[in-house]
Image (cartoon, rainbow, N blue to C red; front, side):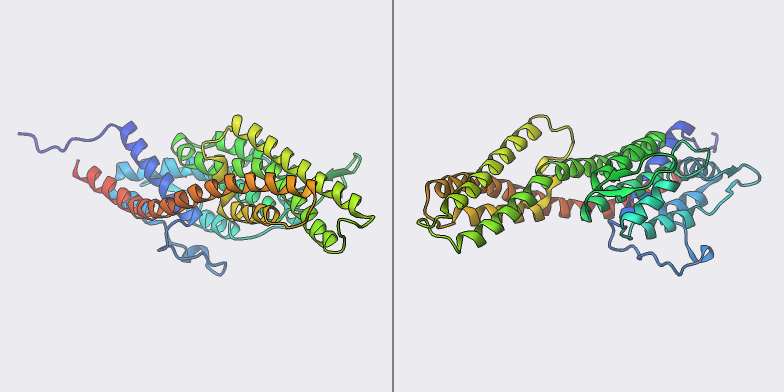
Length: 352
């Protein structure tokens, strides 16, 4: 009887190893595991260790080492030397470490401009498509976390261009899509939910997220003005017009939300894209409007529409809060399973 052990076809090994590396790399970059050590900008290349799953695959067998190196080479844009036991001609762990540091930074307007000057997916460089997607996702989130108004920037040989947060966000979304399309399939499968989520958040920021600050600011001015005007004052007509303008804004908000939800293009829900924090803030604003005690016909209309929106937001907030708690529990389970999955896959391959 032959003692030769059966081997898995290379394409199956490639699929398993690609998925294990893609998921583990995602865990490292997004830092979903509480056991991860935060990156330090004082670490040198020699001090940066290989991720656990990748290191295990590289040491498992010659065949798995070769496949793991091919996967890493394509994903990280590092040339592969096929001499001897094979090796990458650059330090992949240093590249990953550098991006982990980058994903912890915040950027201002000048920082975005510097990035755009050096971000070109059409170039001939061996820049990592996978790491570049994570970088672009971070930048899109940063733009809407720290928005800024229209600014004029000079353009060599052309008229100056006026840009805003939206312009930068759309630019980074385009770049993210180009890099995403260059990623290996296993990495696309892992990255897509994150890219889709940040696109959804970007859409919310450009729609409801843009309207709500205007409504909130108008409400603050109205409360201040109303505290100094009674219904018999000559300025009551001005106050009434202001109230009606806010009512119009609330009606526009409801119409925009209905249209948005009717053609919602993303895999995550609109409320998940809005987030518990913003829903809570907006719900509180509508509750304040619904409880306003100013006595006028227009104020009564404002209270009614605000109460209607507040009731809707309350139901959405409760549902989202439950979803968020369930997601946190599931995320903790998945984070632990990712590491187990890598070891299980390796152990199973060794047994064959």
